[in-house]
Amino acid sequence: MSPSNISVIAIDGPSASGKGTVAQRVAETLGFHYLDSGALYRLLGLAAGKYGIALDEEVRLAELVGRIDIRFEGEDIWLDSIKVGDELRTEEAGAAASKVAALPLVRAALLDKQRDFCRAPGLVADGRDMASVVFPGAELKIFLTASAEVRAERRYKQLIGKGMGANIAALLQDIQARDERDMQRSVAPLQQAPGAILLDTTALNVEQAVSEVLLHYRAKK
Ligand code: C5P
Image (cartoon, rainbow, N blue to C red):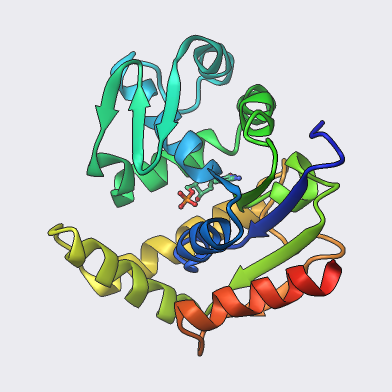
């Protein structure tokens, strides 16, 4: 469990909702640490490919979690001493992440790695089950979402901005398929946790969404 005297803001929500950007900005504003839990699932998907483990080999994947070395340094992410680049953000890496994330042993194996991020003065944790499973005692719980169409558009701009190819219709399909898998899985499904505040950002820009989260956080103080 996370130490109860450390402030945790849990921000959960579906793929490409913008919660990563919002969570990072909130963390910067408050001087808090930031956990990108989706990156852990994405890294495991990449590591599985590297070690020749299929994405449904639950026991081997859970063991792999204990063996791989993952380091976050600012914007940089390292897997077994090798810096991971944009391959982590591809749709393939997202799809692989969503497959390994459906496996209960994998989720259990990643729990401590996620809780290790909870350090003073505080943490903003972004994912799907931050409020429900990983940090159930979080001081503030936000469920951040947007329409699938707006999310596809945001992901499109993000990929194009990175110089990657993208097709908006394919992205929309991919997002809907991933939502479906994330919501239907039996373990830690994507859902608004009890006590979480719904923040629909369909019509909000990043600054407005960040302000909303900060307002809710300050209201708790
Ligand atoms: O947030 P991101 O798109 O990087 O997450 C990739 C995938 O990892 C999600 O589609 C989801 O299946 C999984 N995930 C999860 N629990 C988390 C974070 C991500 O199951 N806390």
